[in-house]
Length: 474
Image 1: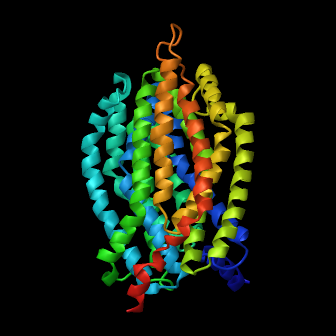
Image 2 (image 1 turned 45 degrees about the vertical axis):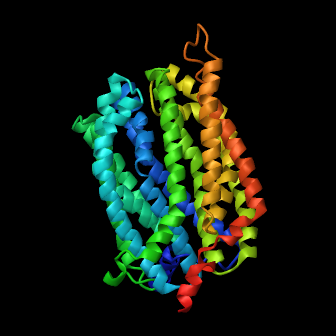
Image 3 (image 1 turned 90 degrees about the vertical axis):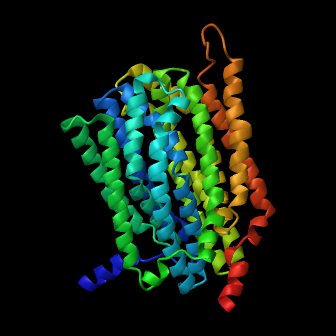
């Protein structure tokens, strides 16, 4: 009986080969633990907000939220490396290419070390000037600065967790990252409460708790990779940067990194407009974005699952299976998103109340959330089909779609609607313009993504159909 139990546990933690079996089952089995893991990860910032909102005040809540766009902007290096790593690992795993798989993972580890040092130094120095540039209210400027500097000084943990969990996902292992995040999230919650309530550290306490928890999750990922010697080699000879693998990681990852950078810059521009509406609206925006973070998790989880699914099957040359899985994955993603949208509309007010005791703030946040609700279904389509294109090696098309919907639609609409709705009652314009512009950009993005996926050019972008095949044959 003991052996049977051990065998069952081993099966759960074993990497998933998504090139065999029913596509929808593979996608579901891979997505569910990753969704739970993403929920745990989202708890990092959410618990920070809940603790400071309830034990420090609404201004502290606004400070933590205002720091978010800058944090996202300055970690784009890791996002790019993580995406490039996941695509390469999934394709080499699908092709059963042990040597290139090992070298890719070694390159990821070294690239992360270099980029962590760059971000730690540059971002720590740039934090306050960026906050000032954005017109962050003086009442929360010092808190925002301190919060960001602590996070950036401990950025290596965040970097290694995100990149190594991307490697694990590429190998079909979404279970391990789940457990590591659950452990780290529980630790984060405990440390938040201890640092803020017992040691009275305020926003510095929640930042320090996040850094420690992320560092623990990164170490657990390293431990897991060292146990997977049946799939690849983590030897010293592979722990070096090689031109071919590093350039492929960068080539595949840069579009995702650029996309995130542009999106974060757009958020900074819109944050400047948000700041003009005052501290209360800033706090309401933080609450909405925290709930939005959870509402988006199924979409992001299905998108990431489809990247791995497409990558492994493209590596195996099973393009018909990729198309079949794309249809089934999109149906599942939109169904889950529709259910979550309904739950938000019914119970959203209770979620808002977790963050603050101010009734006016709860009502304002819920009104803004109603505007966004339907957009989550559109985002399910965008994330799923974009995941397929990325997994096949086409990271440029999703990048251009994101840039167009953000730069040409979301930002101009936000400022344009604010200008057109100015009045004696609303001297800065209607606050709803922030979220109306976001909804319109989401819907447009879904329609354009469907169009480009249908054209099928992503089929010709596979990493293993180009120079890598020739390299392997030598």
